[in-house]
Image (cartoon, rainbow, N blue to C red):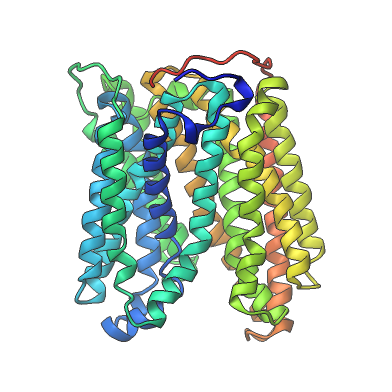
Length: 478
């Protein structure tokens, strides 16, 4: 399909649009399922019992999703993107069916773990495939669409979950995934062709096991510390120790492997380090705003959940607007300038968020988080694109997986750190859900968010200088 002009190109009018729509749909499902259960917990517990175990419905999904990402990235570079993505969609669909029919809380938790395993393949593969089928110029707009779908779905999740719970059909939270997963799978299977050459590979099972076990131990310590057990406890100490030992063993295992699960040469590249720091900070910033701002507005400003949700959703408007237009900036000024500009705007927005926190109002929060969204849009997609562009096809899956994992790790760390800060301040103010407790607790969290955004800017400053590229690099597919 020939384009009449560069500026008139649009991914939704391109011959690859079916693949893009399939990837967007699959990404929407995993984003929505990370938040959709929040408003349905009372109904689920009422039917299944197991109140003390319901936090695992969230933790196990995030954990399984995060720790499998690096392994999927390597497997995609070895065997191609398509089989990994199709496996992820299939696992997500089957596990949704199991969750929908779960007779008790234990089965539901297991199903959520399987959902996370499927989601761990979908997220990075979608971004990797975009890097394969679109040129450098086109990726900004295509990933802007992907970012908007992710952001909107994350905000839509609690609303949809509350709707199903309200009408007494919480199981449809999971059943709705089945036809949509099937549709996404058909789109990808029929319209996307891998460019992977069929060669013999040797899977690094030992390295994969050590990596997965180490990450599981560390992330579990972060997710459950202060919730399932005290931060200073034998559980935390044991998990951290085992995690560090397991990850350290990779230094011995990987050099002896013919095809290591982690190529340490990638982890020593300044550009990969810089984008990893940036993505980790983005993960923390996002979870800090979306997790604490709604309750802060409901309690502090006395607004309804819908109004609070709409105010926070302003961030999801700024994000895709900036992300979709980021290509125009990085093609003219370079990735270095674009990501720095985004980090600076995000830091300004985060500082405004902390400064205005004593006066809770949706009219203040909405424009402030919109500014943050602009900064994230200018930083997120270009960080992924420049990392992908720094390597060839055979390493692009790993690099994308590193980016995705660092963002997930940042979210996990953010949940732990911000939760600990909030609980500490709440305890000092009587530990009640009154404005005089919630507002100072949330302000402390927002200050921590601003500090975390400084690391985002630090990662951007670490990026090596690059020359602007006005000429598109040819996509390897499509």
